[in-house]
Amino acid sequence: MKIGIFETEHFEGSYPVIKLLDYSNNEITVFTYEEADRQFRHLFPEEPKRYEWKIKPDKRSKYLFILDMYREVKRKKLDLLYLNTILNNFIVYALMVLFLRKMRVILTIHSINAWFEYKRSFSFRRIVRYIGRKVLLSVISEFNVIATAMVEPLSGKLPKHKKVYCVPDAIFEETNCRQTQPPVQEQINIVISGTVDGRRRDYEQAFHLIQVLENAKAYSTVTFLGRFYDDYGKRILEKSKTVQYTFSKLKYYEFETVPQPEFDRVMNAAHFVFIPSVLTTIIEDGVMELYGTTISSGNLFDAIKHAKPLIIPELLKTDTFLEKSCFRYQKIEEIGAFLLSLQSDPLQYANWVQKAFAASQNYTIEKVRERNRDLFTQPVSG
Image 1 (cartoon, rainbow, N blue to C red):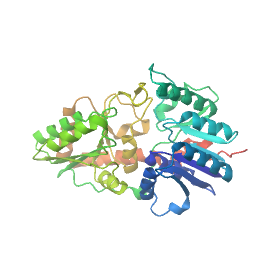
Image 2: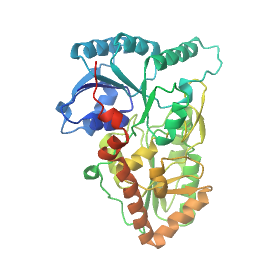
Image 3: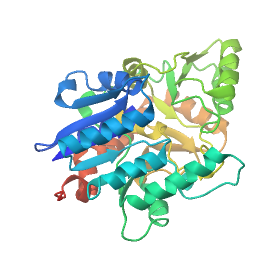
Image 4: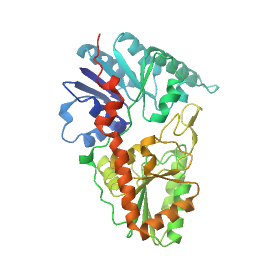
């Protein structure tokens, strides 16, 4: 089977798609942008030539690259086109799909409500985007979401004959998973991965946690593992530069994108992934999303990939596979007390490591393929 995979920026989410579709004699072509391609080079260090890469130069317009992709799809007579991230030019993609006629196309939906609801505005562009999304939804019959809790909400908004798969944003590969964290009784490493973005996470909770650990004289490190976004990110960055601690450390990066090798190093050395998630948010065009239901946190998949236990809010929904590896909290002080108990009894942490490993085992290539048989084993005709 000949397959095309399109990705603009969620390179970490396309990695599992590429690996999952790499079976039998499948031929894979990846269409992506230069910035994402630089990260792909780290994710595929030994097998970049196994796939064909079509990269949009930074100076080439998005419209022309869509045309390039269309021509390449037609020239190669691809059987499947997997659109993993589409953020704009929805009508143009819809026209491309229409011109591809009977070809099998799968679209990943990252924020469900934004594709179906319209928040009134005087913005002409918002109106065009809304219409474009609706047209694109109408010409595609197969969709993907990244979390199991999102399957039902999306299915309920689509006609019954349309199919929804769940391909997560990470797969677990034990050979690539290393546990390099220090003994928990000596130092606790907490990571908040992903963009420092107030629409997604409440970083004041992180400062609160550090202060709780500092007051308890617990040696700890909290790392903001992602770029600082927009005005909120700038405020958090400035605060990060001014706070001072004796027993605790706050680490952060001022890169636009944290290089993948450094990202993996920090994740491997972490004891827990902390997700101070907001529960409701507005990401696109003024439309409200509900975390864990219509949108999912990328931190979850960082934890899956690296087999790390999670610290998450009491009301945040997750995949049932992850539930036993989650410490849920209502107040930050509860996290502090929990972490201090681990330092006094390291065997407790060993139990959490086992829970996280067991949770990640549900996201192996074999398990994800098994849950999506129609996607990964169904013959393609046409």
